[in-house]
Image (cartoon, rainbow, N blue to C red; front, side):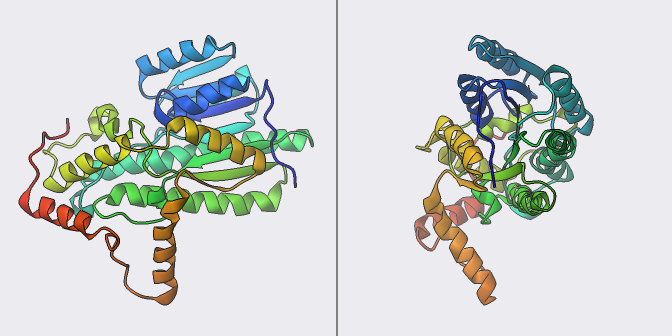
Length: 311
């Protein structure tokens, strides 16, 4: 079995490319001489990223778009084909975060989180995988790879992060199924799922780019403010950088590695969860190793949190 070997002149599609993982993946791709097809909902940031990447001497095609919208991803695929042909790499990276007690999520909360985190990946797969498979059929030496960005929240269920957990579990399931389905039809195209833990990105501020029509009419609940404060602290204090993770992704592509973990030590919680499932026992206490964190969360939810509400 052979995997994609990165070479200058190949094409990579990256969603959510104006910040965080996406921007670092684009920067590293530019250093490798890849043609870049990028998209993001943040127009000014996308324009800045395009200028920066072009200054690195590579060809860049950029399109503002919302990956939750089927028509936007379709337009991205059309632009890619017109400029460069079928992409060798597609990284479905765009994502948003939203927490709180699971029954307190509104209809709009669910639509926003699942729209970007899950439908964004579905749309990327639906529009780009057929193009990649067609390219592989036409050229036995052509290789491709798709990476879907999930999270460690796709393998464990952190309390007070319901919608996010659901969306990322779905991405892991989709990716594992795609891996098996690809094995049935092609030896030239492979895929990976990235499950990062706490890495400094701007995902804790993703609510700032939430579409107006999907914003909540009511103020955030105490649990939602707690979740935002907690995730902000965790994300911003991460030691593994987005640049580190970008390198892990490109390394995994060349090795044909499916699971990509930014923090392998976090797999201890995954192991406990799977042991619970196999043993048929109730889910283990996620705070067993650090009970003080569980107590802090309970007290915050019961007593309220003095923090400014999200805008």
